[in-house]
Length: 329
Ligand code: NAD
Image (cartoon, rainbow, N blue to C red):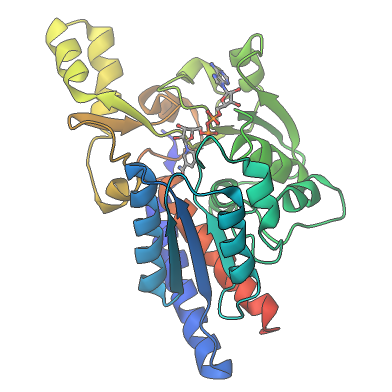
């Protein structure tokens, strides 16, 4: 069976490393990194994400600043706040919580963030630099950066290997594919219009799945020994599991046992759980863990894999930014 890539443990280690780095910086130059978060509207899930980011900052010693604007704010108002954080020397990272209300143009807003404080890595210039050979962005988007960090920390060789990224979103799939090819893998992208996705995925030594479809990737999609990074977070109704267990079909029982094994809720899971999803739901990935872990060489669980890495990478981007701005080595 596959080695478990323990994102929860790695993220904890990274948070500890960051806390030490912040103390060192504070002692040496009296500077504490600062992260500003702008939230527009009152979506419950966004409020929870912002609260969790704030808590994570406090825990490592990053100062957080928060602006909450009403749903009907104008683009100009949001941009005015961004501009003031751009010129505030105590702020080293600026993050606009997405999604923005429909009447706003995301690109106008993201364009207003200084590329040197764009800790989410969503500024078109940072994405453009990520795509260019010989150039580096100021920041890499947090979730794909977390995927790469897991591959590195578990010693997965990337150079010369075949990688498949399933999903091509701006925040995960696309930047993950760019990062893998920058690390010298040969990369294919599988998306909603791809024919024979299982055949293509089966060629991969490394798979990053970021789709949002529970258990899409089955055991027979996977090359023996491959490293599997499962980004998906999908709520599945827990009562369905009980029904299938009760229905007695051995195949169903085995299939849903794999889901059952993943059900242990912990604090990291609470950080990720969509507060909008009703009680009685549990989270599973895009990869059927039970099947895939019998074939793969290494695999991330859900929860406890990529999830905890995303916030850890946000903290890491913020500290990197403060060090760069203050030329602190
Ligand atoms: P998205 O909806 O923006 O993009 C999904 C992508 O999957 C699209 O590019 C689409 O082409 C592709 N796709 C859709 N159906 C497909 C299919 N049947 N086969 C192959 N490709 C298909 O989603 P996203 O924001 O990239 O998020 C993907 C998943 O990752 C979601 O479950 C999300 O909750 C999760 N996520 C997790 C974290 C984390 O921190 N762990 C962060 C962001 C997103």
